[in-house]
Length: 259
Image (cartoon, rainbow, N blue to C red; front, top):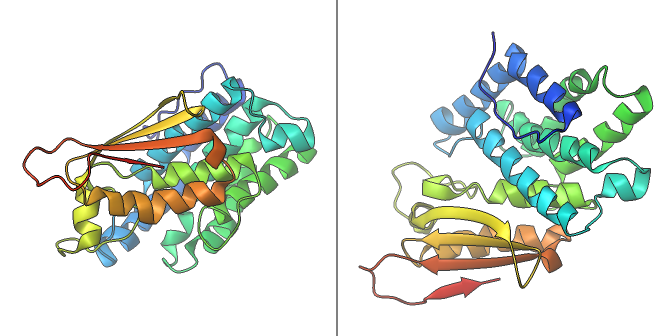
């Protein structure tokens, strides 16, 4: 059985090999289904399954490729002498495994994600990497998984990217700040105010994250989740966030919000 799981590998043969393995992994896709049962059906939260991790992986790759294009060196290159294509493997694996622990529980899910992800990481990296390379990449991926949540500090470029990318899956109510379905509060109103998120090459900084909101309540989502993620990522000097309101019906409180 093969699942749809599209990631732009852009000539990265190692990444293509890994994506092909992920598409065929029935156990992994079943775990993602279980994560969504826990998150959506039992807790009333937003998606934490295959759609979420695919979005995060694509966003993370885009962030990484822009930074590499601007001569920012990934940590796996700086510390281990590996290549940018290996950094792409790290951010993709970090993205697709970061919420796997939701099959156990929401609290401390990042710790459970690390434990569950180990067998899948090893499977994905074999036989394209040597034993030593697999150990290095596994170490970097596990750090990215744990460091996507507070209070853990992100110590690598790749981990910072995964953490930011996770927060950016916020379009059309796909908020990472959990809110109960059907409940009207600032979390829900803020989440539903985010219309579009774009990542583009910037002028003030290498990356501009452009967020379109229908209502100024969307600022809560940006200020409470995205801003702290960027701050803790170690990448704040490379990222400029611009949020603009398009809704014409509300009484405008602000025109633009920037980080």
